Image (cartoon, rainbow, N blue to C red; front, side, top):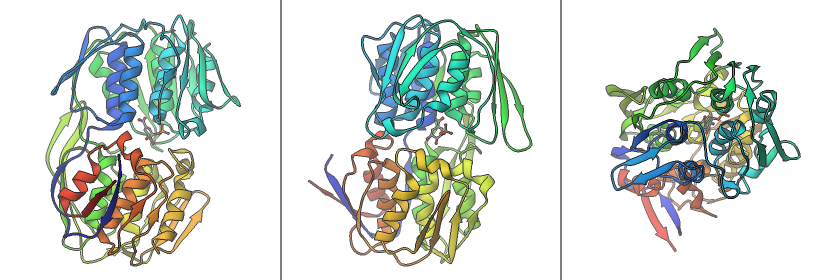
Length: 437
Ligand code: S3P
């Protein structure tokens, strides 16, 4: 991939399809790999992260057949084949954390590696419960990738995760399938619930208890088997969020994302855009893959209002914090995002990456220990340091829709991890997108 220069073009307008939801695609591939029979997956995310999950499934003996329109996975009914080397997870934390749950209960040893960014991301959060279940698992400094897993018989546990992480819950539930007895995992607060929506489509019975604070407990019986199924993956709201936030920030803009996932555990940014004065409407509501889906239209008002994101909304927009800066810089006044310290352990330290680049584009910004304070101001094109993080590139590229000078980047290749067609889509909606060698 070369690079791109982005500047203001015409007012954003039009319809687009987001790539398949990344979180849901990972689950479809990995659950398909451990199910019995065939799982057909339509409209999967075509980015590199999910390709790592699919390659891992193949390395563990799942049969993958794909042509132009369909992808089919022949699963192994929980008994995976020993891989012939370390499994490379690339930039994908979801791949590594979910695979660890599958591998812990196998009859062989395995190791999981990642790129430079993934090698800095915390793994103790999954190591602790897997060890309690009886798995042998070691890591660099006992907390960082690569991971070495000694597979073996597991025992069900009751586990209260200190972090409200969907990846932790999913890892434990996957390990629980091969464990003896019952496993109950408790999340102390809200987190995305794609696993709980998808496992029943594979025939698994789960018991779910929800708590007043948005947390939940999920229980599964050891020995639960999955049966292959057919899944159509909804569009990814996280990928669409950059384009929707750009539309909200451009007076007169009107942009529709077709067939996007509107799962309430993920839709916090739409609520924020609305609270800031943008018009957000849903059409053709339907259900795909156990998830609510709709065509979502965002219209940009004359002016956005500053808004402090309530901390209880943060888990519902944690991946959209980079997109939030597009609206926050366009609003009248100062907006705050707090209670978001998880941003420091994503593909980059997103609080640092956003604060530095916001300063470069001329937006008044204050870095907080657990978030950011951003004051609306005219922004200018600048050279963006992407910190090898796809969401940092997409946020500042979409911000470039309203700068006269071009937004340029040190490296845009990370966009391929989640939304390979991002720059084409941005151009289609009206931004001035120039490809440079
Ligand atoms: C994901 C869960 C979230 C999210 C990540 C994908 C998932 O992380 O930020 O991009 O697919 O389960 P946590 O597990 O930390 O909640």
